[in-house]
Image (cartoon, rainbow, N blue to C red):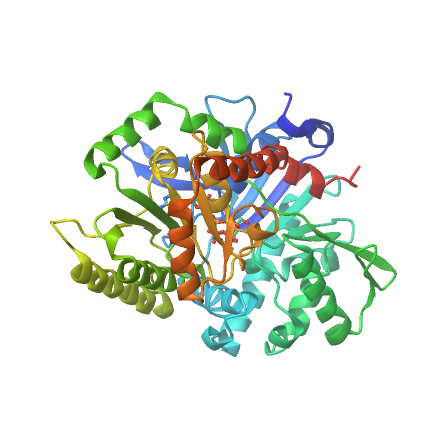
Length: 477
Ligand code: ADQ
């Protein structure tokens, strides 16, 4: 099987074993038993063909809270592609889901890594369960993997896994990628369990971050907390006669898939239908998982300020916010959802004229096709996280701009800002400037829009998700 980005050489001879908290397929109960439905995330899209080529394995939790699955693994394949791969289930108990997943991963590490210190929840009971659950994941890997496999552990839920694996079987050499930022030393040091987290990660052969800045923060922590020997120029940590590579690899998207979908008749039809309804109003779009790091509330305040200050645009702009429900069991997320609901209600109450509320709020997960139709429809994408490892929405918006008439307003605190320098970059906390940037985007000439979009698309095409995987494994033979 030939794969995009020339990935086939490595993975045809070595099996890829991916390990993440959640499996890429979700179980769906039907009258004929359980069916596995593929998720739509970028990581799944990129790794799916490689896993099929290498007869690979994906180890993770299926998101369920029911009794353990009867079978340990299932084989998955897709009608449109050759080959198949296996899923190996890690069954979690209610206690593990609560303390390891919802609490330590999402209430401790998530805010810590995003530098939201005030949101961090500290609990040694959570830490103990995180430790045990990571050991359990590692145990499953040890059961399944061979030294010839390439083991790739994903994200902050599993920071301890690499060292657990190496300790028990030094012939297995795991790789790790962190999808969030890594905070500066002064933030990281507040974590009472910082040392074992660093040691856990350093069990890896290589640790990947989106940006050099995140990798540098990590190296600072290794130096200051572990007294580790760091070679910054080569991005190497030396410990116990072993070298751990630390690199930056900005993740991306399947650019062609988004671009091609934007050109389909079905997407065009959807856009036309929206247009008939909203007429020639300027569409400003926000799309996010409903998470406090995404800056949704501040964004709404900037939209409110815009409507207040530039009154001639009232009833002439429509702000569409798509929000995917996320971590709804966690208190901080419930509080945030209420705040967003109330803020939207207040702004719509204040500015609704002639039956047109200025904000349309869609609180659900939408299909890829619907999403791309919104990207095409939007004159402006307003993507303003307070902090974000990368932010794929920004890249997806750029790839979907087949008319070259969209403007991207992007937070300078999103990892994507480092590559998308032709976006209008803003500080999301500076409400007045975001408001004026919306005004600037509306008035921007078509020529200027095209110039900026062309540059961003050039880069998006060259550095797609396949390129990300290839670069990460460049030195592996
Ligand atoms: P997330 O925080 O989930 O990912 P993001 O990078 O924006 O954030 O990715 C979200 C994905 O979900 C996108 O691919 C998008 O298409 C999809 N999506 C968003 N809203 C949707 C909706 N309403 N319906 C359906 N699909 C929707 C974490 C980090 C990011 C990092 C990624 C990848 O927080 O910073 O970019 O991992 O490393």
